[in-house]
Each structure stands twice: as C-alpha cells, then as structure tokens.
Image (cartoon, rainbow, N blue to C red):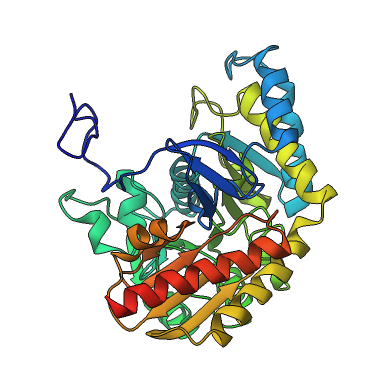
Length: 395
C-alpha cells in the first residue's frame, strides 16, 4: 500500500515525513537511497551525539547481541547494575531506574513526585511545570508539558500540574506561598521544543533553594540536555546545585532506545517492589550500549568539545548576518536561531542544501549536531545553513 508520494499507507499518519529515506550513515554524514550525502545537524533530535556507525558502539552492539539480549527484571542484570552505579557516581544521585525512553523516564519521575506528596500526607499532590516545556507524549507527560499543540484532542488531561512561566523564580515563589499541595518542580535546564530557551544564570540554583524551603523535589528533565550536549555531562553541573531527580534518554543510547530516572536522598527510597516496572527497560543490550557511550564521551572529552563547538558555531552563525535572523541562542551544542517569520518550510529546503535541521516553536531553527563534528564539518554546516536560510528568505 503506497500513497501518491511513494510512502506506504500502512503506517499511522503521526508524522509529516519529508520525502527522503536514509540508507547509511558515517560520523556526521548520512546518505539517502540515491547516494546523495547530507550533513546531520539534528542527530535524530539530540540522539546520535557520537554520530552514525561509531565503531565503539557498533562493536558493543554486535558483541552483546551475540551474547544476551534480554532476560527479565525478575532476575539480576549485572550490566544494568553497572550502568546504574556509573550514572549515579557521575551525577551525584543514589539510585537509578532504567527504562526505554524519555517519556517513560519522566513518567517515573512524576510517580516519584506523587509518592513524595503522599508521604507528606497531601491527598492530591501537585507538580509545578513550565510554560513552553515538553516532557513527552504519554497522557501524563503531555499533561505536564506546556504546549497546547501536543495536548489538543487528548482531554481530559491528567490533573495535578501548576503551570508558571519559564525562567521566572518569583512565579514559583508565588506558587509556594499560595499552593500548599505542591510536592515537586519539573523543569528542563534548557527548553528544547520550546525554542532553545536558555534560562538566566542561577535559575536552577534558585529553584533548588525554593524546593529546599518547601520540602519539594526538584526534578530535572535532562532528556535533551544530558550526556554532554550543553558542555557538561549534565546541564545542572553548570551551576552549584544538585537536583533530587534527573531523567535521561536520547544520547545515552546513541540510537539504542534507553531511558533512566535517577534519584537521590528521600526520592531514591520512594519506589518499592511493585510500585513501578518495565518489561524491556534495562536489558543487557541497552545497558551495554549505554556504558559504551559513557566510555567514549569521557575518553574523548566530548563535553568540552561540545562547549567549544557550540561557541564557535553560534559565533559564526551570528557573524554571517543571515536574513531574517532575530537572535542566535545556544548552550553547548543546543543551538536555536530565531527568525522573524514562521519557518516550517525550512527543513525541506535545507535538505536541498544537504543539511538536516528542524524548526521548533514555529520559527526557531534547531541545530543539535553530533559532538564528534570536526572543525571542517562545523564550517561546512554553517555554509550549508547559510545557503538554506538565504534561499528561504528569497522565496
């Protein structure tokens, strides 16, 4: 079954897919079925931070696939234990729950928040969340998100969320004064889907202070920011603070589905046997890949490389003085280029210039290139981006 555009009709229409299919990848590059080459400036939305077909990841996958894929969480999984210990040591957390995706990691965090509220004898615990945020597409995570677009049509939404403006500590303090049922704050260190919005320095530390004053959990959604993308292994490490809960996914597997919910202190002791679980989460294959990703990130100094590349790309994009650009924002290799008009047509146009990117918040070009990008490839990315943006402005 194929439609007029050559795409199959067998898949649900949950995506407006562009008419290209990639046959192979190598490092920062992808080739389509016709042999055309593209520079990957999106990384599968911050997933393939080590690029495509990385030899260490390929070797880990092949070796583990030939050894053991899956047993069950009814039994010990040594690789899961090793990955959990390593993530906790790197983040300052105490315990980890390994799962399959970012949405599933955030679901675990939301359940921890409710358990924390009930432990304080709050019958209907509430969670403070941010406008313009995005936390996933399950019913609970889309309800937590600050995007009406992802919520529309799925009412009734899950209750128990209090929404405030992002990067506004006074708004959170007002909630603390007026809402005694709050149990936690859930926040992205940088708004990803919300347009690469970087908060003021001290924002996360300020949230930490408010949470401490009110016995709330501070829960950071590091699904897009985590694993070195912002120039630190975790984005919260740019400030002098430590959260209670961290959620991870995306770059932790470099394309292998994996998620993690990390917790410390009282939050780490909330889940008990039977409270939560997963069939596939934390299986030997996913955890072996996660360990290999961390090995490469640490061995090759990729957090520092992400910081260096992000500064360079943001500067070169700014000095290029591209038409229609209002602002260039970045935190490491999370780069947002805000335009003066809607730009939903740009991803397709960029393909014609051999570049993968996407547009979020309607008019913000989002670049999430791999951390293994060479200096020459970084320069090529700017050249291709500039050509696409100038063509878009002239259209």
